[in-house]
Image 1 (cartoon, rainbow, N blue to C red):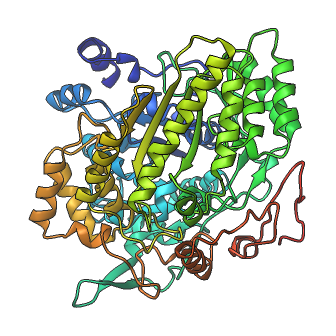
Image 2: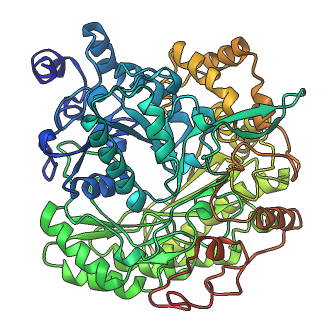
Length: 636
């Protein structure tokens, strides 16, 4: 019925109808009668964004490779589709079977960005699934979540049945298997089983890395400060530890990949060359929660690339990770991949480059097939502030690299910076403008000396610092919206060079992001109120409306400044304390103190262990395939 309404009435009324059709090459469509457990992967943003997510592609094929289970997909419908669905009371449906989400055993959201939280509520409502977990009946799906924002899911705790911490490749099939077995047990029982949903959740909470929020209650003191969680069920674990893949080289990776009918954000083969980063930038949440660094071998990556090109017909391979150029075999790997696919003119791309000459040499090699601009992230305008955040990059590094880039013929350079970082002063902002001008003048001088008549283009992209959980800056306050906007205007007036383009992010969006990142369970009612007022697609400039959020905070009597603008004491309980990502609190405190002294911490891959605690607590080690440390080295 849904399929007929979709094709007869909806697709001709909405923009980009291929967002909702499914049927892509390499899509998997399984018979529901032949599986025990059904799950829909719910991405809380549009198709083009979701289909670019590597985690979706990995888990989709991993689960569908299991005989007893299936996974389908659903993305947030754009506003025109939502309007048409609500007119017809049509429930949100999956792309593969076009079944309503409420018919699945599990609806699994990925938490990639705090500003997509209202889309989760909207998708549940469109799916006609009760928003609050306490209102769901035994026949309703389990609503689960994972991903980077699971590091603090407390603002969503009332809406989620369970949360998976860490890497899902190993724990998700186990979880779905257990749900399938439970269903069979219940089907074989002749007696009614009231409360079986709670029984199932209790069983699932015993799995490693699985957090069931309803089994805990949050407490606050008379002053409104968070005091901690109380277990409501004695069987619930005190702490939930993230799951991590021990042997990344042998970890599952799909060599069939769906080929979308429409352009998506990253429309190419994606190879995950390594996981984790040990550069220890103090603002970076990903750098903390994906530790330790584990590399795939060059042989494995070449084999995966060959298969993927053959199975998809793509003409570009993206080597993805938090810091691809750090792979210890990257140079021979790039050469081998280019050589292997030279005849088919398959290009390579490296989304992230570090600021050193090696990166430019690598980029020169990579971009023999097709040339694009180069992007670097100095993050701060002065050496002092780069040392505070432990960026580990000097201005000499940057200028030497960019000189090589201009000498190599690049004329477009993008530089990423953050404003509002801890200890920032006006001279740090001035340093951003000065650095950009220095880059522009250098480029013009080099081009003039070579007789090249091309214009230099330098783009500065400026984001606002958001203090994130599980980082050394989790105790820091964010600059106020007024302060951030004042700083943005300072740079706007300061940068007059026509060769420099200056972009900045909306400070109000960063403020809401900070509130949700460091929030507790009381924010659930704010999310609900904001969604009722129409908040959705808050990460999209054309849909974000700050006034809705202001009203939601006022009507729920929640002060957002408490979460974003307050410095937190080291000994204060944190809403995410019970979620263990392996990094010691003492390490984070130590790093925060070193930041205030602008003292550096070195990369543990090449220097001494920084004692962050990850390797001993997770029973794992840094795994480099061509460098300093082998698997199971003395790091453990």
